[in-house]
Image (cartoon, rainbow, N blue to C red):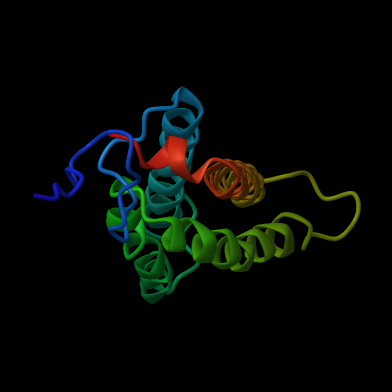
Length: 148
């Protein structure tokens, strides 16, 4: 009589697309927290910027945050693929922030729009760093990340 190993055994890695519901390592939790926080910060900043703080006259630009809402569920579910493509998507918002922050002629004092743009650059940098660190750690430690 042969016995098959228990698929729920902690010694065996999970094979689902999310790898695990809750990775055991504190580093993964920290990078997830920073990534989700920075993503939520970018969403709030983008909406507040275009609708209330420094509107450009076209409220239609508030729709630029919609692509940022899509990966939120994947980040919360620890989907490695989501962390990978968010680290590429964030560069569009980083570029927009740099262009808006440095678009003034020399000698003109910074207004609220420029400060918001530098805030966007900072949040994009945090999001990229958190996603890159998360992906790098999970690829180096696939079994440790898969244990429940």
